[in-house]
Image (spheres, rainbow, N blue to C red):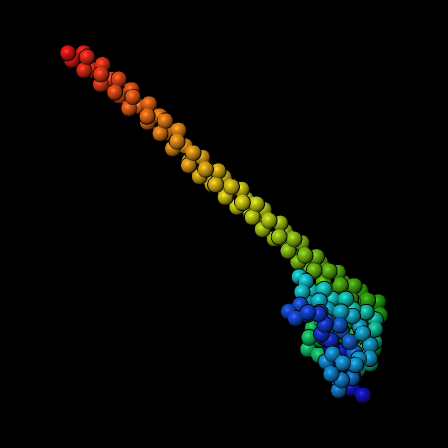
Length: 179
């Protein structure tokens, strides 16, 4: 019986959520499966992948063929790299300790990349929030200035009314002195 490691779709329309399963190659996509290995949620950034590493490695070593997407997921999590290192140990190219050291170094680098991406996303989110607050404050100031400008002509009208009265008084003074 040919087994495949593949995704089983769940979730709402437009919001997919997948289980990573081992199934007979002849079974339908969302049909019967042999074992559930984990889950994959592409809706989050970065995508959330939760797998049982040991079970998955066991199935890959047994001969279960991952689909293209599952191959990318298993590669991302290091299952295929671990299989590669175990093959090197079997051939005698590496010792068990060397393989373990290489895998530990690879996982540290991978974790560093993931945390770097998460922090950059958080900082970008904070920058966007600060920019939105600054834009909102600027808009508020513009609105306040517009309201002040709308109310200011009323004060200018009062000043303009006083000015003609002063001009009229000046004209009467000029007329009296001319007589």
